[in-house]
Amino acid sequence: MSDVSDDGVNEQERVPESEPQPRSELPLEDTVAVEPEPDASTLGDEISAEFTELDNLLKERDEYLDALRRTQADFENYRKRMQREAMEARDAGAAALAGKLVDVLDTVDLALAHDPSDAVAQIASAFTEALGKEGLTRIDALGAPFDPEVHEAVLHEEGDGPAEVIEVLRSGWRWRDKVLRAAMVKVKGS
Image (cartoon, rainbow, N blue to C red; front, side, top):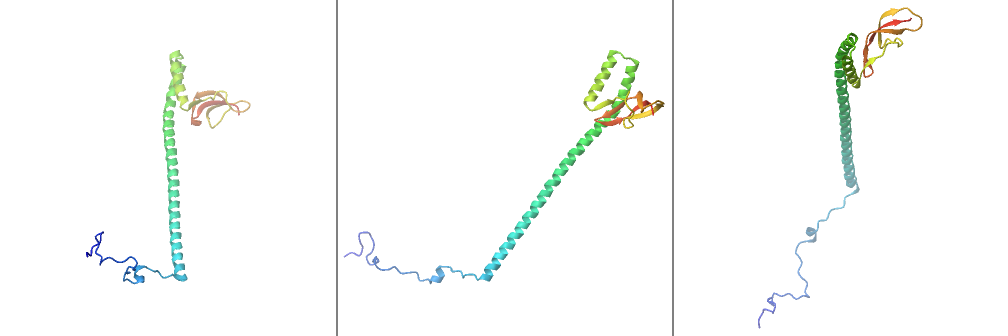
């Protein structure tokens, strides 16, 4: 009789299914890692250390957040200051140019007094209109009450009542509501 069965397995090697399989020879402690239960004092120390670390991290986060906010505020203040300084520099340059053009306007006024033809009047009108759009305006002084902020009295005539401008000797000019040059005037009154 043959020792080999139909499925090709040697009958002597075949283990009956009802017999228990042999177990590994390793002890149970080596196959499963068992951690000892921590006692209350070590568990409290671990939790306390974790909370301390968490507190330190939160404190560090808050410090970084405060530093970021200060940096943002500093940058915003810097940006606003630069815008303000640029605007002031632009206005100062424009005011300096307007101050130089006031002398040219005096020459235009003299040209009009000498030759009141339409050609000179048109040039003077266009020039003062263009400067007026940029903020340069003439101070209307004739007949106005005397105001030392906008008038420079160089002649005085006795009279009754409050001081009043009776003659304009040189025009005054404002640059964006700031007196660029006071009007030189003759005043009548006390």
